[in-house]
Image (tube, rainbow, N blue to C red; front, side, top):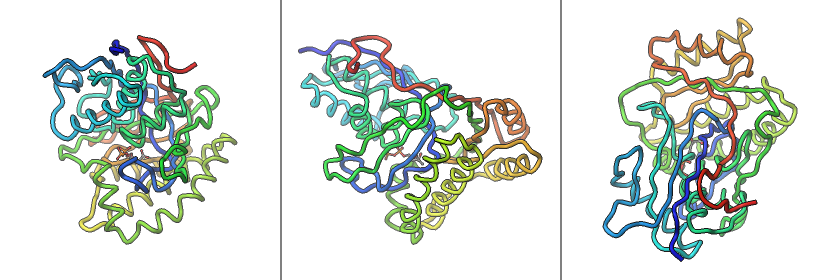
Length: 332
Ligand code: DP6
């Protein structure tokens, strides 16, 4: 059957217990589990259709994507097409991530593309299975299939069928928020895929990172279930610093922080001393995301914006899971 066109939207997510290292790069299976918060303000919309011969297969924000990102997307589209027994597919992505914010958007893009691809092919797939499919595009995309707090399991099976995401707590159940301090640094970061492979191979701290993950995961599950922000924030900060410590100790080192990154960290600690509570986390870039109570978001965001090296602050709230905007819904 010829696939029709379908459109889906997904939100980005920020990990509070990070995914950093793989047990199988081919199937994109993580070395450990991870836990994240999906964010409503950062979304990607993907429209998947049958590929026209000779036409580029991946466009983002109106431009043809080339090189490694294009190859990676084409491989993923082929995987989706094979799964649903269809012709080659193409995708047009529109991301509402602020220009040059340097925020990892691959989670939202691959989650939206997986859903739109399944819909375009008229396929049936449940959301947990969809998370395993999205994972093949980018690991963190598995978590963007669901809204609110989400856990992505390591899984034990060699075929990865049990390395799926599941929701921990839905949107609206806990009034938390994230202030995203965008630090414009100019230099191109080492992407998370290459960095985590390099760190796992060369950092003497990597085994210690792996060994500490189970404790953070179980403590974070409890903190979320109890809506204990102080506990969740403390675990998130420690987990993030441990991840960056492995990267800094790699040979050669991978250092994502810019001077304003440290200024934000210092400010967040100072604010806590003054009674304005927030907890920081950073991923493969200099941006700092600050977890706080929903009621404190404006106050926290205003303080972060005072730092000269912070070009803007995005006020983000928990967001929904992937949704089909146009086309048949592949899940019920
Ligand atoms: C630091 O999901 O981008 O953001 O699976 O290789 O595509 P690939 O990696 P990716 O890695 C995200 C790493 C991180 C932490 C996290 O989101 O858990």
